[in-house]
Figure 1: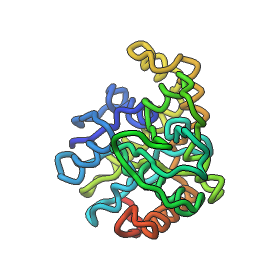
Figure 2 (figure 1 turned 180 degrees about the vertical axis):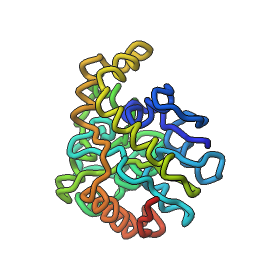
Figure 3 (figure 1 turned 135 degrees about the horizontal axis):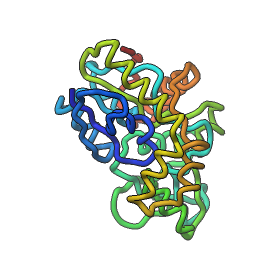
Figure 4 (figure 1 turned 90 degrees about the vertical axis):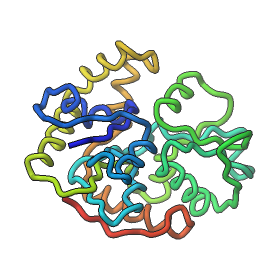
Length: 254
């Protein structure tokens, strides 16, 4: 079985125990940015990926793994706007091509929370820049010029729901034993955050050890519960209405 792994820090607790063979398995892993992982899954070059949730809308072959996700119950830190002027004066937004989910959430917020029509670009200057993942964490630590807006916090303020950025999505039927491996890995990761952060910080100067532990423990949530499933459905509805996705599909789980 081939599995695509998003290489961002926030995803590591989901799969650390599998990749390190702490939980015995015979899977093959490919690490890449979110958009590349999604493409690999869509093209059947891998069978499973912890990919942006918007990828689920791209194929009717997909199914969701239960119980596991990458989400935030409030402030997420790693999906942010960097503003050169207040939101109400923004005319142009620079997007990040690495995650279709964050791009869709950007469009949902500008349409339904801020009520502003803006131009979206991927290159050049803009009044507002979307930054995601480890790059966003680095920018926060550098205290960039301009106001910072946290997208998960904005979603929560608008809906009173947590936001789900990514889930395990598969393009094939998977045995219960294999499903259990992924759920066991998530549960192991949740209880070994300090160990994961120590390992991460040995090879990365992205953030300090204490910042790493604080981020994974307090800003990221890995349990896919009923409230988060409701949030996915609402997000898809909003995204379809503003044209960020083509359709809002029903959710099918393994």
